[in-house]
Picture 1 (cartoon, one colour):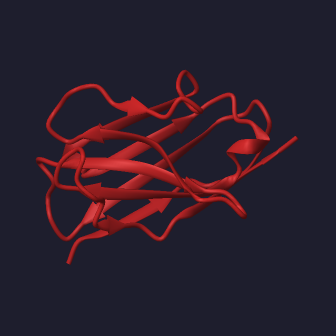
Picture 2 (cartoon, helix red, strand yellow):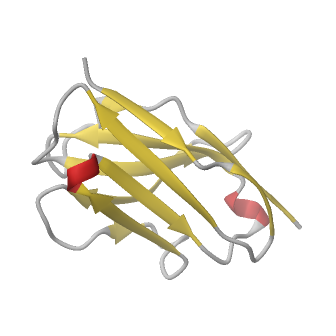
Length: 119
């Protein structure tokens, strides 16, 4: 059974940084795409960005472009979300998710990690 486990959330002041990790277990991903999403209180889930396990550049939502960076470590089956210049509006529960390919539904989700940015 595939499992995704996020970590690294917490409380940070505006302008600060956090790095989230998403460790996959249950299978080794050599293909497919890992995505990051977030859900703020009272809002719909929002796509943050994604990266392919097999190569290529990550892609991002406009709201985080230039501030967030997604990377991966295939040897550790881990994907990272480096968040810089955080804003209060970045406050949300952040989830990682997996899909077999870009454009297909994400079918495996982590439990989420809370990120709170204070002003």
